[in-house]
Length: 425
Image 1 (cartoon, helix red, strand yellow):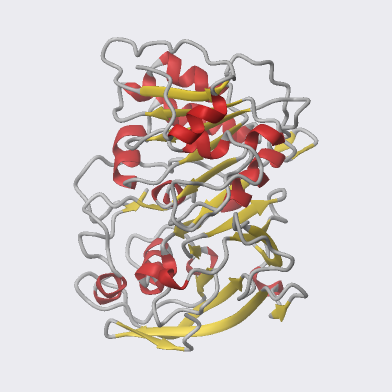
Image 2 (cartoon, one colour):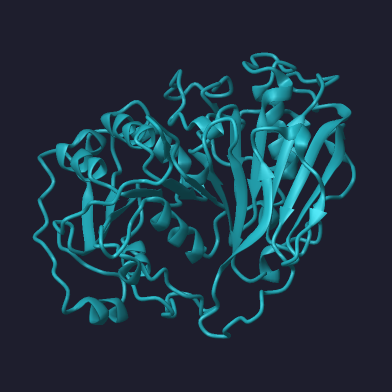
């Protein structure tokens, strides 16, 4: 293996900065490790999300598509990383490349030349990040390698890249890597994920063991073979775990979804939430306590605060109309869904029927970019709108001074494989 970067521009930027030799994978452990910066630089960063002796990690739930640089900057701040402390930002994935290394280990106000939209890079160098390290961990053997576990143990922030969550489920869950990630969570280390990485962060996860599932399929039969939900897994005969991948206190009884506006996933989120709740056979949680969070592309939800008073806030890129189907609002948004009464029908080979028992709130960024706003690079931004994850009953619809908004509650139902009710989408 070699220490490589993804673009010529990144290599030029980092040419004068120190690199270290890479430790080779141990026999039988086919991980890949690469880095930008100096992983051996002294680091004293401490996460800011500890209250007394208790720590609750700051979490980024990113909806896929173009990355949202402001979400990574927020993770860096929540990790306590400054130019005085240094910090190691670790990316993990089962497949793919080290493209995050130069994207994060970059200077502020640089253009990300790997995208056609001229978004900005993260600027981690100027914010105090001393190294960005990517581990590609494709097997269960690699997920127990001592070198891999050592990198995780020294991480100041950890981000799970996109890919296929079935790989993460089959190759990582129940391994020493899983244990090491949980230790990081318990220590308050900020964690995040995009697309498939986002799907793994809730207590419950759509594991995609038989492939993806559409909203139409989920509503027509919430027990169809594609509805593989970890740790329920009643629709799959494949490798089955009995516990969650990660236990993040602020995402207890929660399932997350992504690519929401682009792939019309409101219906399948309803199916996920219903299946986890006690209103459906095999449901393990009280039906009114399960929360589904769906996130648009180019959008991220920031979850912070101690257990019992956690809040969600949005960061987003400028609205990109290419992402949004006609059914969804022309704003970067996140959706929070609950089923508030027992479904009238939830059974195998039958449609999910619940004529008016689903509540949805929509948290939306402003429809236009904030001003002043440089044209190149296009900066992502944090909005004022927030959602109280700890108390569903205390939400109040409003529009904030920056144009962001909290909308709802919208009331939905489902019948004969279709969604009934307000078109919040």
